[in-house]
Image (tube, rainbow, N blue to C red):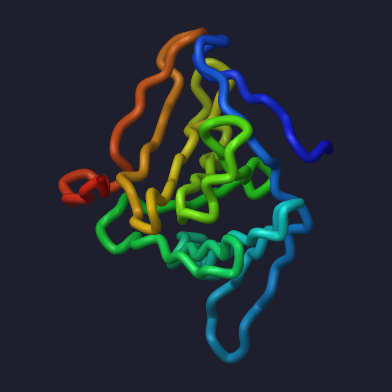
Length: 163
């Protein structure tokens, strides 16, 4: 897998740079019953998912970007389970600029089981930070061969976009 690839969303109408993550590792913390999956990018950034081994639901997500730790607040969000860890990737927008230094980055991943698949695609989760602040995460599902619908992963939670 190369360092960069281009992902086409909505049948080619929108392009963004995606840097796939690699080197996934699963750690079982003792005696804490949480399982962690840490995935490191080719750039050295890491995203860590902490899951309940009983339910498989994500309890916390932390990102370490350029040595700075960012925590994703999931308390009032829809449950995240059946994460497809092989699909986790950083998003860098705009292409060619390294906005990570300013705390601006995002990451995407697929989740769900085969019964959640619509028009050949699983639901996609998009999470991001803008100038160090968490922004409203989205869940996108295919609703046609070349279209998808996105909604908030945390409905009813006021998350302001920093200016």
